[in-house]
Image (cartoon, rainbow, N blue to C red; front, side, top):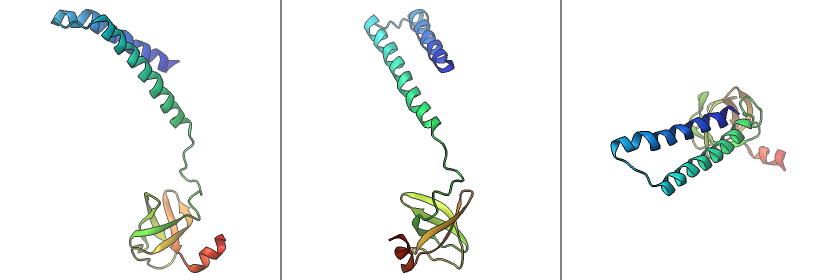
Length: 130
C-alpha cells in the first residue's frame, strides 16, 4: 500500500508541475502528450514494482552449501587463499591442502561464509559423480 501511495504522490506532483509551474515559464505541454506521459509513468511504476518485489522475495543463498561439489578453475594461485572462477563468477577461495597454481581445476569441498574451501580436482572426482 505504501508503494501505491508513493507512486500516487509522484503522479500528483508531476500533474501540479506541468499544469501550474511550467506555464509560468512559457512551457506548454499539449494535453495528449501530457496524458501519454502520465500513463507511461504509471505503467513504468507498475512494471518496476512487479520486478522489484519478485527480486526481493527471493531468498539469498549466502551461507548455503549449494556451492559444495561445484567445479572451477584457479584464477590466482591459492597459497592458501586466492581467486577461482566457477561458471562466469569469481569467488574468493582457500586451498584445503597445498598451493594450487593458476589454471588448475578445483572442486569445492566446503564453504566458510562467502569464501569457498577447495581442493585440486583429480581423475577420481569424475568417477564419484558418475
